[in-house]
Length: 275
Image 1: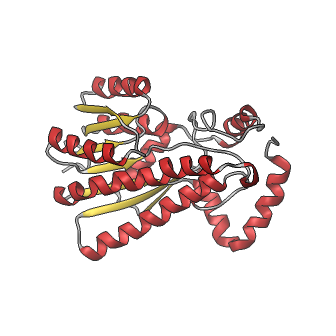
Image 2 (image 1 turned 135 degrees about the horizontal axis):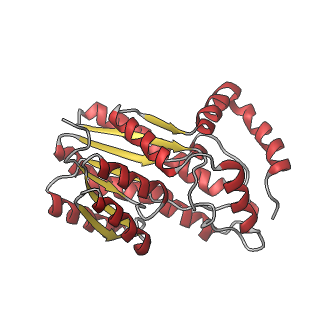
């Protein structure tokens, strides 16, 4: 039986970028979809594209930081489809700013969406994944869950947390013998609007940061990212690296060990846009 045809796949952050590309890729493979986002306009467009491919779609406005709403959503998805096979925790936001200039509220917002959002959705859907007898939880971390760079302390903290949470949960599922596979995804630079939508501290030129990311770092299309993720799910990969940059830098950090930090600091001091 196909890993995707007829399976119920939940995708958060489905209104754009990797989330939309995942929804379309899964629809093309015959999956039934539960899609959510805070961007209802973008979500509606994703639903339209998925339904054009013949997918059965359940869509909901959902803020993954709202725990009660997430649990209610999980119940609604189960009621609609009767089972849940795959959950793609993709919803996320970006923030760029030096820690000295960053307020607590900015760090808390990134952690609430990028880490606690993953935890909330995982906790709400895990019993359903176990009950399906064939579950798969896919959590999107980042290249910045593998290495740190200046100006990304909040985002690094959240994405390293997603990585640690996901790897621990995979081990727990293996020990318990539960029929749930767990995958952590680490995208490199993806051609999405995440940098353009990123928040920054007062006085920082957000446009320069976004332009730098889009022109220098974003190399992989959302469609290629989705293809890589779907292939990793099919092969039950514990870790999925997306893009040559993610693969190269992961190997580089492993080779250099902690000394990579000084190298990054030296390079970043020369090339990153100043506030």
